[in-house]
Image (tube, rainbow, N blue to C red; front, top):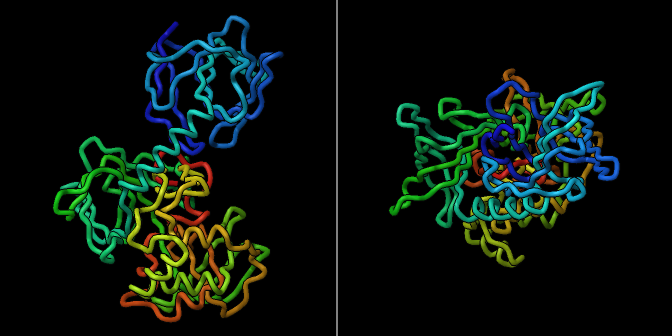
Length: 404
């Protein structure tokens, strides 16, 4: 039997695993998450990351193996039984197809419990060692990106040197799922993009050598509503920094929340109040902005950031107890039709090829206290990379082993 290779790393938080057969002509393998398993009838249903489903009939003579998460060859594979395969596992099935059914002669599985453990470990690593910020300069010749990174002493420039063999990815337009991210390069990163990186900081703290980088054409907007078209999912707002109208496309997956007044006041203190913000955060048993960067590798449920469990990436840990991320998660969801003309909003959006349109990722209402007394600089820049570091929208859902 020909050797099997795992192409690339498994993208955590329910993200992508690429397993491909080597050399000699052979049926193309199917990769997906198990949504149904019937060991008695030797059938599986696999759902690929693009949503397509494949029915799999496992031959009685089929070889079934389990491999550890992160393995790139079958060297450490161990034989297992089809009865050990369950919903939520990641599986590669190979064999001929007929009448819409893949007749598998080979099954390779990564268990969901192993995936979850690796996910948690990676998210913790991104939370404690990762950096994130808004891009202020890009030097494509030297493979460096400069970001405004928020730390204990406030926002400072940090030069990220992208290592020669670093993994560089970019979020797809309108998506914050690590699973949708594609291979990229420093050449694709632009000023005002948001970036998260994982690597090591220099001794003087002025630079950072990155082994993993993920970027996105994300933007924060502080705005007031001009009009709401709930039927067609279109929101027109006035950007409070540029004073220009922005057409916001609001899809069914948008994270639309309304902050409670108390939460909004505490977040305003954190973002705008310096020592006052730190006191507010400490009073809730949370770290102020000087805490560790957002959890989750850019791959859990979602940007280099995380969804609930971070993300995936989408899901768990968050940026050192980040107040904004936690407040967003705990706030009640609302519908687009509940928004009113002239109401203040904070939006996390993804830019599109059409400069007049953006795609909403997270929309927060009830934010008047946060926008009332912005510190020096634009309101958007004061918000930092909150959409990457936390907030159910960003790294929620289907991310991979990086931020979410």
